[in-house]
Image (cartoon, rainbow, N blue to C red; front, side, top):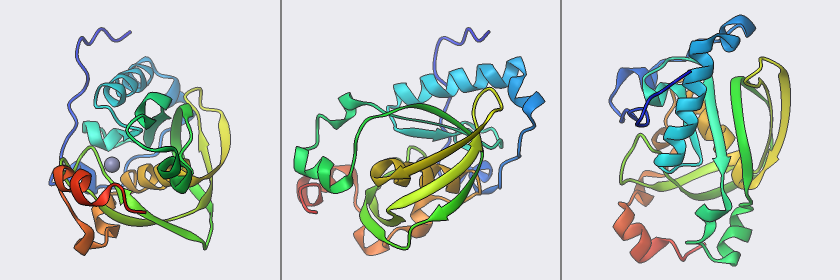
Length: 190
Ligand code: ZN
């Protein structure tokens, strides 16, 4: 069991691990104590950040593991109309291992999207409205997730992390803003 008192360190853009395709895990590797401990530490780190998703490369581990959870309490700073536009609803805790996106809708949505590994920078990223992801869960069991809206966006973001891609690669660069100016000028716009 992990007795870490503090969360793991989140590495920032420029760390080579963020640009490497992460390693696929076998069921045996998933069930190992150290992998189970890593998943718990990643969950804690995501909550403390706080963030709605965290991929293992972001804590320096080149493994195909991501955790996702979008809590209702994170929605307080958004209006109902903003949440509705983003199709953002609470998502329970998920562990996503070796994910494959087997379907991406042609229909896209464009919204500001941040990343815990790119502090204080946010920009517009176009993502498929809907995706179907096949992956394993924390017990190494196959799982199929049909997601739309913000959950689909999170899944695409984390999938990219596991393949060495950062959201900034897909950001419309002219929309890039720091957090202060995002709040000041852009947050209220659709
Ligand atoms: Zn990210």
